[in-house]
Every structure is written in C-alpha cells, then in structure tokens.
Length: 498
Image (cartoon, rainbow, N blue to C red):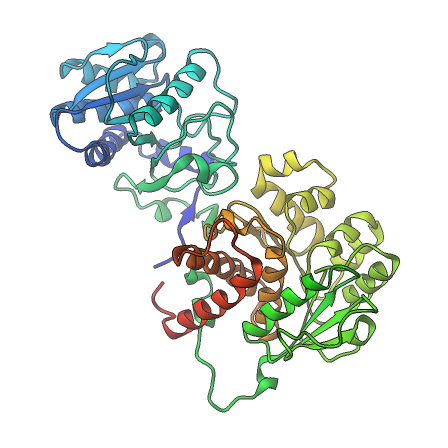
C-alpha cells in the first residue's frame, strides 16, 4: 500500500481530456448512484438532487437517472441554462429526460428528504457562489439539518476550493463526498475537512498514477515504514543519540519540559534541556531522566540534534543563542519564538539558508505569515503554496501546522497530514511535536523522514486518546506524549501493516 496521491485541478483536466471518449460522466453517475442508494436506504424514498450549470451538473443528471431506475423518488432541481450546458452535461440531461425524469427550477421545502445530493459545482470554482446558487447552498444545508439526512457532495462540496481547501462562503456542509478520478488537496486541509465529511474516491476505472505523477500525497506510515525496525539487543544509550532542547525563558520553562519529555519518550538516548531562565529548577521532578543545563552549556554539549524555540522568548539573549544554534553542526529544528526571531532579523535568513543541511521549521499560520511577510489570511488561503514558498525561501523542510498540516520539502515535494483532531488546539502541542522530531533526528533518521513520521505520529497519538475517551475537549499536550510512545512501539512491532 502506498500513500494516497493528490492531484491538482490542471493535472486532472489533462487526464479528463485524454479520456474524453470514455464515458467518464456516466461512470461517475453510476458510482454516485451506488453510494447514494446505500445512504438513502429503502427504495422509494425521496432524494433531492441539485444540478448545476457545468459538468458537475451532468454527473448529477446521470446519477439521478440511475437512481430513478432503482425506484427512488427523485426531485431534481436544475440551476442553469440548458442551452449553455457543456456537451457531456447536455447529453446527460437528455438521457435523464428520455428516461422519464423531470426537472424543477427551485427547491421544494415540503417533502422530508432521505438524501440531498450536491451537484452544483465541481472542482473548478474559485469565487464565492452568488444569487440563486448561494441561496440553494444555504437551503440545502438547512434541509439536511432539518431532516437529519445525509448530504452527499459530488466531486467537491459546492463553495469549497478543491485546490486550497478555502471555503468560499456559502459552502455546502456535506456529510459525505464522492470525489472522482483522484483525491484533491483542498478536501484534506484548511476548511476542507469541516465541509467534506466522509470522503470516498471513485477512480472511474482509470489508472491515474499511470497517467500522471501525483502533485502531492497524504502522509501515511508507508512514507517512513522502512525506518520502523526493532532495536538491536546489543545496543546502549549512545546508540540512539543525544537530543537537545533550547528554550525555557522565564515563565515558559514548561514548553521546554514538554519538548524534552517528548524527545525522551520517543527514544532519544539522552535528552538535554538548555534553559534561559536563571531561576529554573535544577531537575524536572516529573521526568528526572532529563538533564538540565544552562542554555550556553547546552550548545557546548555533544548533540546529534537540536530543537531551538520552545519557550525561547524574544530577548537579546534568545537572539544570540539562536544565532549560535544556526551555526551548530547538528540536525536543527526551529519552532515558536525561534521562528519569530528569524522573521524579525533579516541577517538570520542567510545563516539558515547557508547551513550544510536543511533545517526543519514548524510554523503555525501566524508564524508562517511573519516569515513570508504576508497576512495570516494569505497563508490560509493557499496553505500548500505558503509551505512550499517557505521551503524554498529558507532552504528548510517545513511543517505548516493546522487542520491538514502541510509538509513541504526543499526539493518541491509536499504532503498533507490527515491524522489529528480539534483537541490538539491547545497550548503545548507544538512543543510536543518539536520534541518528537528532534528525537527521531537524534536517532539518525533522515530529516524529511523524521518530519513526516513525527507529524503523522503526533496527530495519530491524539486520535488514539480521543478514541479512548480522553478528549477532544480538554485534551492536553502532555497526554499525547505517552500515547505517542505507545503507538510508535506498536508501529515498530508491525511495520508492514500500513
């Protein structure tokens, strides 16, 4: 099993053009009718189908025709001009009418619906729906809530940008999305997960990978499975590297402790914490295995990997230590205030860019905006573009955190991570991720593999806790550490079960 490939709009359009004679719309209609029938339930129940002015509307016509043949009671509302439909969609409309189907020009509110199908817009929409389309989207959402029925989106929920995941309000709030040919990135990041519900892919009998290289991927254990190997019995703590955490300014020592505990419990042989706070404790009573140092002393320690940023602050001392960290000949992770200092001091960018090997940067959207000199809205409006721009500008591997974390590498490749849940929107989660990354780097994992594995593990550990009843409300960063340790050991025991 391989990582799920993601394809952009332009790539998919080229594939569709290559197969223009292959009745793809009828195949899409058949796949949609199959899922719609199972979602609606018993034959004879009322199904509302919304058909739009393009090929997405054609998919809806073909699906409605096939549902009628299965004895469902179809009400099809068409929002468009029949004379201006694309050829394939016009043919689908004719097939529907020839089979005895009828069309209404507005949505009736009286029936109780067993299923509502959104076939208004496909993957090409890049501006907010207006007029009748906007009204229909709002009404479809309300009727689905009123009738407690599934709302199935064809290819992409109308109003959602399938390229970026931006919801161009109003947007369909689908409970299920059947996307055609291949997965699209916008379904899995930003607003996509809140609007798509359960996603299925209907490949329409096409071998997409044979047609075109994927534009991106969904992170999976396949991406780092070759590193999931049991430890040799003849090993010692030196076999698993020395990890360092630099941070912990006054009132922020907890951030460094969280990162250190995560690094320790993901297997770093030794974990050192260099603290800026002169009044910090000499020992972490909850985790006495951690070795605490003054910040300057940490940078003189033999380390294989260093994380700079958790609780670092933005003082002149923090800036000096960041400059020294950038010169250190170790694997480097920059997070939190290390990123803010990097954005504020243009001299540091060159130091980072000229390092021997790529560093890893883990910004949240606000930090990414500071690094790029743009607004948070700009970052969130195209998270993939922002992550790739960061990777190129800073010659570093990037994890742009948030819903559907985007991992972008210096060679232009990118992934979207789908593990994780809203319980992770709490203080300290980024510190834990930072610690997980530096632990794998200390154990000599390649930087890109360590980043993918840590990001995926971080979210999966939080998902495991929610499945056990711990959250999402009230989930804490500290709880994720032990869950990550348990899950990682499970993966090492079954590396091939992807």
